Image (cartoon, rainbow, N blue to C red; front, side, top):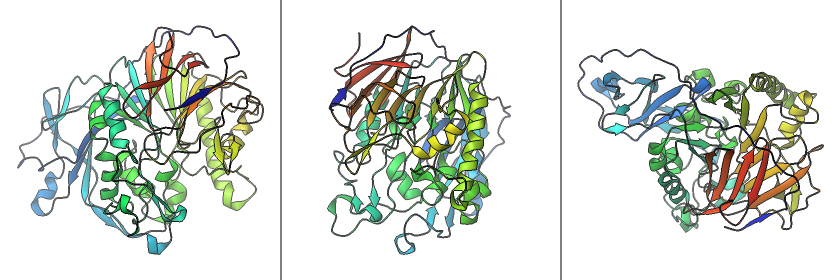
Length: 485
């Protein structure tokens, strides 16, 4: 992995040690009645952590028929007490809906699986689905994996056909296994899990036989099968990417990953409800008494500035404007610092048509309505993103939070940023770059808790550290040659 960086310009102060105390909702457990036995096997079993730190066990089961339907979900045992898991979404073949592709290149979504779930009590010490032990959130996580943009690209509109059968060309399984081997306490996925939109052409050998479309078989191939070890290693925090908007893989997003209760109006099944399904409110996820994540759904942000005077963009602008009001309220909690997480980088860089581009202008156009100079509210010290298929670690001399982009999880990589980097180029008006470390090879990011703050490092597909930064308050001090002493 090749990295470049600009010199550091300013000194940094120390920050307070951050302690993690996840806050999970409680539920009562009653003994399960006698049943005819659990379903035959699990496709996947994992834990997602959502609003206010509520942890939920998920299980994806093969479709059952006839008398077995009542036992579609397996039993879960929590601290010695067993109950039947609840059906989140039953197996279904969904009518073909308008997608990002033309109708001839689309098809109905088949989910021949039952998705089950069960809320995990706040103080649960052990949980298992059958013989599969679940990894519960730790009170004081020491290591967090940040990964994003992990699927294999098959997209007719771009004539893009990634070699999904070649682990060098699509190394997500290798990356996920390397991340799992590092024994994380938490995984944060910053969005874009699903990329196999269209059928592989007969003249492209690298993706022959791959599933495509938006049903379970594609989700299994793009995420659940290659990430099996990582899903089993730690609970996941999930952000929604643009590939999970309603015209794309939104149906699977809401069935399989979204942390809120499954609702038909917010399922992406009916295009008439897309103005609902494409927006979900921000929510906090506490990691300590003085630290929280703020999760933001930017699935349909687009790239250009949003114009609220036009009917086509007014709804998106107004939705995001209200959601950033919520972000302001969440970030205003006294004595609590925030890490902002969404898919599209707000203050970062990319190269398009050989030209250096700043951050996401759509979100900037909304955020500057509330904060014309800072964009973010006070209290946000770090922002985590994907979308741009690069690693970026950015610090600003202006009053803006440090930014990490971790879009290197498997999908085709973006064009490398310039080296040397033009230090005068801010990603948005009133934003002054201090330093940047960047790379364009596959891998993932690790955040390790340290006494003075966070150590944030970029790793290659095999888990070898290639660049390391120390986060102190909202500033990054980075070294591109390995561990920073």
